[in-house]
Length: 603
Image (tube, rainbow, N blue to C red; front, side, top):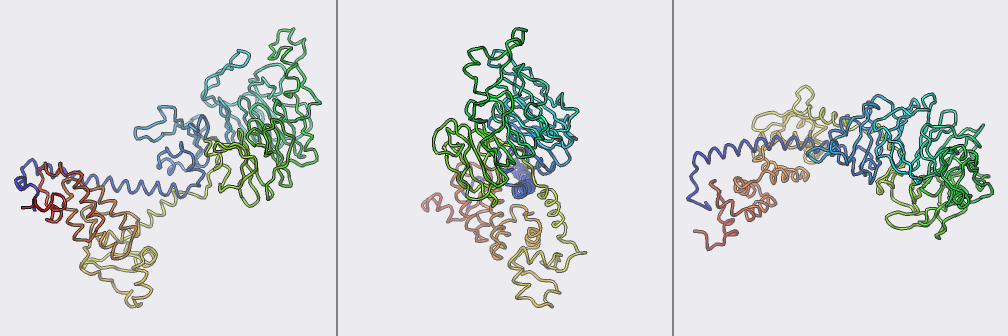
């Protein structure tokens, strides 16, 4: 029955409109197929990459094609709220992503990584960053640095020099082979292959270990107590440092006003001699300041005697506290404890080293700001300190899988994230493409399905593994002789639809015009293919328009597709004015019109 009988005849303009509409639907179908492939890429990317890669919002804004094609092997997220990232690919290309920069964004809301030409081809080992610069370390021991924030004003009124915004080899380290790097808030450390430590950056709390200047621009070797010792591990707090020797001894220097280095003040800071000031060198502290801060920071390295009888294998620093891991799997902590980060149930600002109560032996530690993290030998991750706005004074076990998972909620990385090379998404996708190419391949086929007299060449193994209907047929209903002859499909299914069904078993995508998909729903329902039925429903709902809703409504009734029938009915209610005013003939069954308009309005 026609809703508007006087509009049942189409003008030439109407026919042109219908032809254009048909062409549009064809284009939409092609786009839908592209979307299917893109969705598959996205699905594979999400499934194949580790969960800690997916926890970083800035990385989720990358195009799936980028993560697929480039094969990412390393990521470093940094900057305010994790707004910047560095990406290293398998082919040693390096990219920068900056949410704050317009040239990193594309019109479709994705972020477009910018290649860092100066680092491409370098075999990047790791990154480190502080409040205004980034360090990159190569496997060959080269260190590059570049800035991402403007120069800043120091406490004494002077300014830091602007850091080059493009990666530049760090002067003073070019003759050294560096094996590790670390950054505090405004200073950096580098560890050489022969166990020497170099420092540079701001030095207002003597965190660089130089007594003559507030800023050290060229890395210089930190000696004093380290003479004759080999350092194997380095770590930076906000404005202090800790290092571990190959003998398991622990040393620290820099700011100590919260006791993050040591609470034993028997050795006081050595200040700049008066004669140096008289010679015109700038000093950061006047006499009164020296007296006030005489026990607040160390110029020279100080051995941490409180753990003298322990063998330290690793140290980690928060902003104002320290964690030390022993060779026996025990953790000791000291320093600022206002958020429980030292693991003591009080608000002491200074704490002597205390052993952290973790049930099992600890294999790894990490710290950032006011948070402490430990991993036991069973891979259980414990946290304590400031987390989710709470102060946690006792280590609690979590469900996190990696240390990176812990810090992802804070949008910071305590170290570079290395992506497992076993998860090669591109290779998996190529395998799926190869699987799809087997469909209809006569040379490898071992079974034939015949529809309306036309053969479709398939493979028993794929049908059995992908479809319960065929699994039951092969294992229970069909004899061996039955399997050696073509299987003839009942006439209730057309060739094009049944072929699309079999192809779906190979590819996971539906390759059919939208007007044929309803018949595929009927087949999926009979074969109990729930996922296929759901996918068909999605395709049809996207294809429904004012001009074709009646067609799909009638087809849904014919195929007993209740969900699509209801969708068409609701679509009609929402677009009744457009349908009534349309010049296109829209035919609905009487019961549908009665439901919409009321039975008294049906002639």
